[in-house]
Image 1 (spheres, rainbow, N blue to C red):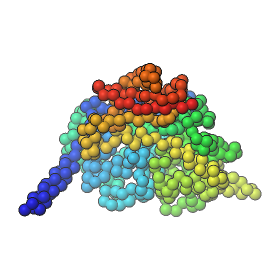
Image 2: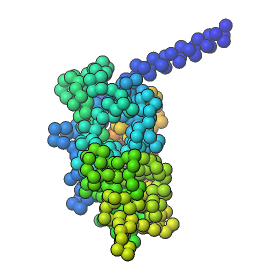
Image 3: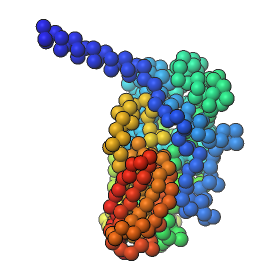
Image 4: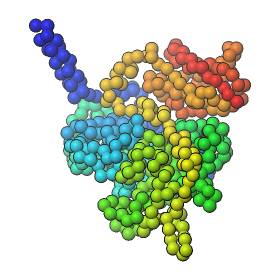
Length: 473
């Protein structure tokens, strides 16, 4: 009898969980998160490396907090697939910098995508706004609807998409907030998704902390190891000076391509099954050319290249060292001449140079991106549990020890809260006090502090959190 009761109880709990998941609604804050203010550090917007010049946001779809909030819900809502099994976030995963860890992503019915999923981090600064490896999405607004209609990825027609969104009770107020009324249209869905994606920007990494302390990216960064600085020098130096010419394609502080957004890097001698941008344009010179991705968070976005052929950064660097092939559309910067004949350039990096390059690329990793709640899935059940544990709140400081700048990284409960920040030295004297918007993206200058131990206090609603900070030379 007890066995039967336990079975019945287990069945009831399982049924309740299934019901809860089937009736999942997004959990959103009463006041929208701030998506409009990007809090870009100065080095992103100075004259020589101003990324905002390349902003592909159109005049008829400016970023708003309510629009991006609607876009966030749409981005993670699985009803946008034919069998309610896949969302945009199923392939663009936050923990992988909104890329996918699989060579090919799985669609709603078990099929695999033809190409590797590109990261959408910093997509707002891609030249001209063209999306996908072959640039067939002529703008973000066009591109966001394509996977929904794709027969492998999500499998809906646009009319089905609109109808399914109309049927969900949680969308009416979101559309009213974003557009003034509850009317659902494919254009509005496109606009909201685009706003959310354009809000996903990365600019808090070890590289950024170092970059804030120097006048130019070529300068030695005080927070870098010798290997990381050596790798940075190789990255920004020309081939004639022993470098890798990497910055020719990966420009600005967003490390995106601002020239044409596409290139052929000599992956193959001849293009066969995948002709790249040519498939979208029909132009012969586009055969074998593909969209250049941002290198921001490149450590998180493996596997690499349009077909995911390289599984590690070491393999990528080795390819550029010895593997470039003389494709018909290889750009002049990757071609040398030997005996009057063109040959693919081989950089022939030493083992230490290859190691240094990999170490530098990893400094572009922005771990705050992985836990930023305003970009997270609002449908996850874990959101409920986390919001019920205020006693578990914590902060962390990076770097620590630090010599010049620190950032305060909050957990999801404190994320995007305005708090009182105080720093005390070891004798208890207050050396710093200000209100801080806790996004983990504000750099705090400690360069004038004497070396030693300090205590960082964060205060909010009567709660005080304290972390120990070591100031080094």
